[in-house]
Image (cartoon, rainbow, N blue to C red):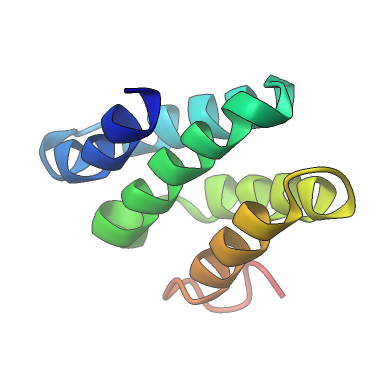
Length: 97
């Protein structure tokens, strides 16, 4: 159920005006979650980036990238690594190098 909700959240972000706040919340929750729950937060963040990533501020993209780097050093490396590729591909030149 949690994973299904996380997958659908990405589509809902198309209608949200406050994607920066949501991205920050998802990053913070992913970092604080146990490994079993972390994947749902990362899935939701991946969906947000796929549908609304171009609308994120450079500061939020940078914060997300740094958090993902830390997650890749610990447990949950595979979902975080996949998501890091999505962050690096955002059209915000020089933000996450």
